[in-house]
Image (cartoon, rainbow, N blue to C red; front, side):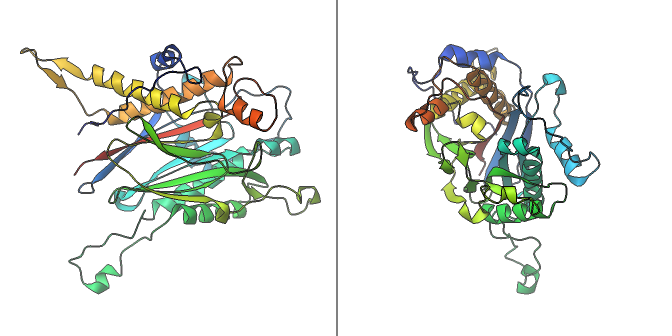
Length: 382
């Protein structure tokens, strides 16, 4: 079944991107990896695409003696599998961000998350990417065996048989708590910290649940409107709330910022057919306005609608499909491409520039950072 809903264009203003700039991003190739979850007779199907790009290394920055997870370790294998893609020659790396997309037990839903390792740790010689990778690995591991809601049972079974159902319900907050515990036990992660945003999407009820700590986040587009956007959590400007692991033997870290999963903001939202969910690290939200994200998604939808139309011998227009997975891949890739262009533009007013101005600080243009984006479209099939 094809995705019938579309997102219309938003009107350009001096504060939003020009259609020419966005169109240039649409013209580039896509290198995203896609994921899809479907299982009938559940009424909801989720199409998920992911794209990411690490910022270029700073030759003037501190040097970190990084020891990545070994390729043959559980986290190393999972990391490499997550970052595998059809065109590795794209030359993009993920930097200090990481993410996961995991189909939950019995295809009952999807769990997704993003994490942004806090770069300040590099000044102490610590690689913050390890914390983010380990956090997402453990979140994926716990989500894989769990349900997004109450475990599903066959109502025709006897009571004793129902009690033997495998798995358990895992909320985003519980997932975050379990994943954080996994990082604290991880010997390869000596120290570090990270923001985190975890969502579960229920294929039976269409319920989105989320737990967000820090300045990563997500938004939901319905039609041409952003109906929800997660507000960032910060202690002060450019200092997000963060999960942390501190070296126990060094007193110099005693005043480091330490937050806990219980500090996360929680959200529940009922999804509808055609909704678009964009989950991101702050490399996106610091450089791209929500209206620009809507415009990019709109252009992608229209482009695919046009490319799928064929003229029959009788002159009638037929729509080819399905192409939902391809469509959502392109959305994620184009958003990342546009964010990368914006972060290097010093003449364009960025969300980060505005935020700095509200704090009485001077900053011009975009903020160069790692950027990770997961785009999900919702399809009702029953």
